[in-house]
Image (cartoon, helix red, strand yellow):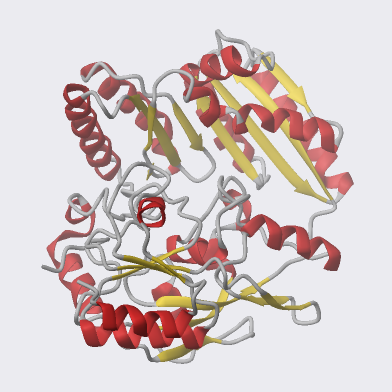
Length: 460
């Protein structure tokens, strides 16, 4: 419990406008983008690293749980205060401190919104590739904490591939700096990467240094419908074998094709077993050649329909289908559980088949969208969280999807993290020794278990 004297300490640290403890605010910060819930006792809005440090010193002294939060767009309960205590909202720490064009780096606070950052970079003719689906509202601090990816990860990688350094406030309130503004750094353990993807369980990120790259001259997208899912898998292999590294390679199954077409009316062939979106970028001449080559490959596989964007506007129109996916499914059932698993690319189509079997077994509607270029699948379990009997089947289906992904040589999560949702199945992938090492790291940095407890691994 946070008593009145401790509350007053927090009030002095963050000011009258930085502490919320009325019911509306507590409810607003009790859940994430899915439906995981946990009621905080107080919500704090620090504006500086100094304030975060002071908060953590009090929390450590009083043994109060602290859950860091950005925009709350995560899907596995990572920003939910599972044990109450403090929700530490970092959205007021939203300054881009520096864009260093000469050294191709940027330094910023964690509350900067991904899309705002990307738009600012266009003024400098620089590019930051990671593009999670929630980039319009997701914060960079959250992107680091979850090691966020997105469709462009096929060619450009994910958050960790652009991360050079961090400022982190530890559970004790001590402040440390990892990394530097250099493209090479092998000094000591790679602490920067330790905190990336740690979901706020090891420290509070208060400053981020990333590397930047030149933007591509042009980009072009193809939308290809296949009558056979296996052909959709083959085109991915053919593209890579043909020496082409696409920016994005997205695959939607027949269920999703029909859901989107019924919702958005974008002209998708409803008989298609799979829809593939392929984007390439680079110099204009090279892109034209790649598009022609991919078009020929699709014709060889007797694709049902091939659409090629010739302008930026046509590119955006093609991606409308992919962006419509989550809005479209919301029309069918009140709850959509966005699952996340990754398998080796060669196992992508077999994993699609396995999910279909699991859906049939438990009488569930599970359309799938996948980042086909890197084997990352997002089965969307459409259900109603109020239907207790159906939710029991959903839980069994999720466990079987997780088990099957590991069985096929894959991983439990490629983007969304472990959070609360997959704590119970983590041993399935990393084993007892892996769990012991994870606990040892957590205990070394947060011996009181006050930083985002009950996420990733259960300590007690």
